[in-house]
Amino acid sequence: MNSWNAGSAKKSILDYVEKVTQPGSSSFINPEDRIAVFDNDGTLWEEKPFYAQVAFAFEKVKELAPQHPEWKATQPFKAVLENDFPFLAQLQLPDAVKILAVTHAGMTNSEFQRQVDEWLKTARNQKFGVHHTDLAYKPMLELLQYLRANEFKTYIVTGGGVEFVQQFSREVYGIPPEQVIGSAVVMNFIEKDGGYDFMRLPNIVQPIDDGAGKPVNIQRALGRPPVIAVGNSDGDLQMLQFSEASPHPSLQILIHHDDATREVVYDKGAEKILMEARNKHWTIVSMKDDFQEIFSKAA
Image (cartoon, rainbow, N blue to C red; front, side, top):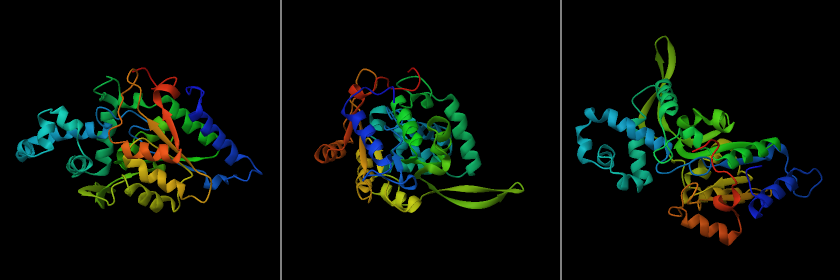
């Protein structure tokens, strides 16, 4: 973890891993129970000015707009078409889901994956001007590697679309697609061109993988709480709380966006989790003080 400054945050992580992986320790956790879950946007990579998947969806709205003249007078589509960035910067999850539902459906899953792959190769973050996949946080990549070296299984638990994140999770994070838990559209299994595929429908599988939906979907996928949970916003609060329910020693980590020079400062949308972290003495990682470097590549 060379990109981490020495301090209480790094020490709490190293101390925790040492005690739970030391045979004979009263805190020892068997390797099969070493499960660590990470939020994606704002935890593993940049989420400002918009989530990468939302930026992808905005482009799809503009492509589909000629087929939907009603969008010119209907929010949040109107704001997308008019590039109303102040409105879009305040976009709430229900409105984001409306956009994702119509832009991520009506096609086969293989076509959707092809579009995502092409977009990731060309699209650039509006603030930093580099590819979205260049904006993974270097210290977090090192943390993932460190945990896996100590026989932890690392999962992404994201409010974003599971198929979207699966397209780059292995390459960027070293996390295989089957270890991505996320929001999903309803799909039908179909025959197509002599083979098989999935047709994506404009309906979202409930619950959405955000807030209280995160522990529900973790339980569905894993059947137990993780021992490590890492997030950055109020949408991750219940996931970190769920990790406290583990019968094993657990660690809760909050990534705090407080570096105005190298990244973006914001507490909006993280007020509840910050209060909980301080009250419960969770590990709070200051990007300003704890990260020697921010991004995996120059931004």
